[in-house]
Length: 338
Ligand code: SP5
Ligand code: ZN
Image (cartoon, rainbow, N blue to C red; front, side, top):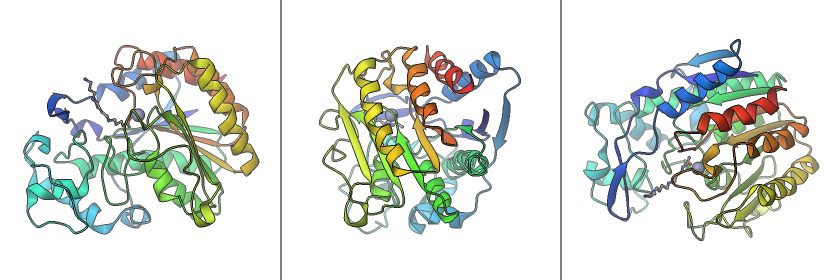
């Protein structure tokens, strides 16, 4: 297995996020990916790591994102100060469907929550993160069996015109669209604790991409508004979106059983490339999530995914426990690399 990383991710270090009108330190720490990289290198010293910059074709992004949103991301570099994150400076508005002129109101048009901070170099950093996914993905298209995009920021909550849930560019979805252009038949399997609402929204009316997600029931957790089990797609997409929502304290047995159900659907779909939105916020000590998986659970999850036998791109999403996150990663990839 090989790894790509986003060279520029340290340029994005939001300080704060707000929740119930209370400010907390941001959970999206750069150390997260650094520690995982270090742990994987210690375990597999000859691991090949490719660092990616922000040189990515805008047309590739525009397959998924709106032009005005990409312009907004780009304009942060001139609007924001070094080290500034704007969450507390902006007054919350209910956004309507037209870009406001006032700078302090734009945030609510281009972002749907109070956790996701725009920072000065966010365009560069988000492009570098996507580039890591794109670079790894292109190897997988050539049938290399496993590449891991160890990137930051994540992507699976980003919408075509909005940032959300610490995500800015819909990394996995942008690459999936690229894979479809290359005549592939992809599946997105999202095993982050939170629902992969970006991919669901983007591919909801299509049958050329299967989207599957296991996540916390949105009746109690982010992204709250939709993404329940009865959402199975519309028009051509009916039957090509599958959600499994789990209750708090879902343990290994329940989780693996849910994964079996999704993987059965994946196999029936006869995909030729698997894109896994991966991460370890399903871990029992994650500070903002409530599932009950242990470090050893990740080997078992990896084993089931590997048994599908498809060339696989692993895309980094969430994961907020800073003590054990790299143990979870080593446990997962030990199985993949065996
Ligand atoms: C990629 C990803 O995992 N995004 C997750 C976004 C979840 N946002 C919800 C954050 C709420 C954190 N507040 C917890 C307060 C505990 N004191
Ligand atoms: Zn998550």
